[in-house]
Amino acid sequence: MSITTETAFTTDDVTYQLTADKIRAATARLTPADSADPHPNRSWYALVGTHLYYVVDLVEEATGAANVKVKTARLAVNELGFPVFALAWNTLLTQGHPGHTG
Image (cartoon, rainbow, N blue to C red):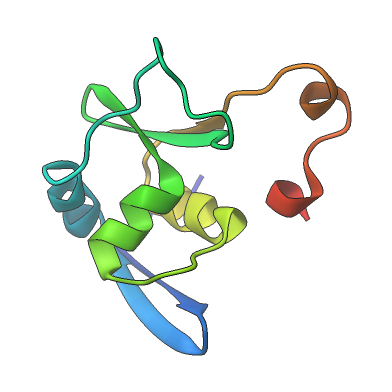
C-alpha cells in the first residue's frame, strides 16, 4: 500500500485537498463511532488514533465538502494511510453493496 501525504477528490464539480493532518483535526470535532449504538446506514469506518470514525463524516468535516460518496471517502482516507474497513453481515458479505463497491 502506497501512503501519500496529500490526496485530492472531486465532488459536485469541486476539487478538495485532503491531508492526514486535516483528518486528525476533524476527529477533534467529531464523536467517534459507538459500537453499542451503531448507525444502521453506515458501513465504512477508519481508525484514527484509538477511535473509529465514519469515513464520510471524516472527509466532509476535514474538507468542508458535502455529498461525498462513500467510495470516494474510503479511498481517500485509505490513500492517506489510515486503516479503513467495513462492518458487514448477511448479503453484504456475500454480494457487497453496489453503492459502496462499484
